[in-house]
Amino acid sequence: MKGFVQPLEKQFFECPTLPLAEKLLGKILVRRMSDDLVLKGRIVETEAYLGYGDEACHAWRGRTERNGMMFAEPGRLYVYFTYGNHNMLNIVSEPEHTAGAVLIRALEPLEGESFMRERRGTSLATNLMSGPGKLTRAMAIDLDCNGRSLFDGEFSVEDAPELPEEAIGTSARVGITRSRDLPWRKFIIGNPHLSRGRVSG
Image (cartoon, rainbow, N blue to C red; front, side, top):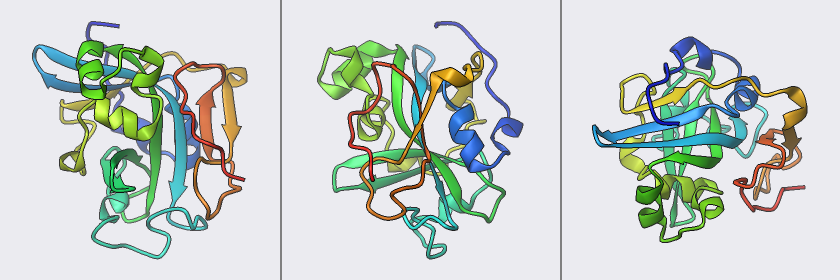
């Protein structure tokens, strides 16, 4: 997977959150740490969150200092800290001033694995980024990344062939208690890098 591939442009992200959660599957999340270090992972699992009709979303009660980035223009990163231990990576969706984001739940490592293994303290490829907290640790994503753009050169999402419909699975989201029955988790069926979290419901 080494070499330059054209990053997706802003228009790709200017679509409703639920379709975006599916469209992102198979695409390549990229972080260019330096000229000599590029990290890449294939998006294999996502979850959609909306500011309306979704009590599991940070923004369902309105805008706050913490969730403000969810109201930004599509293609921004919304990173938050949870459970006292994990950073969570989301890609902002919906028009500006309307809250919506897609949580990136799992990645399949493609490039920069030695860096990822050192960060994660594991050599097992299927354990490197098989969860939202694992992937942020592997790619050195923290609260300093909140608000970064996918179009500024450091972060991007590269295009990849669209997945056939039969390759995409749908389920309730993982590990939540509110709005738990919404079928807003999308994943590549049978991919060994999926998270191991328990599906809600």
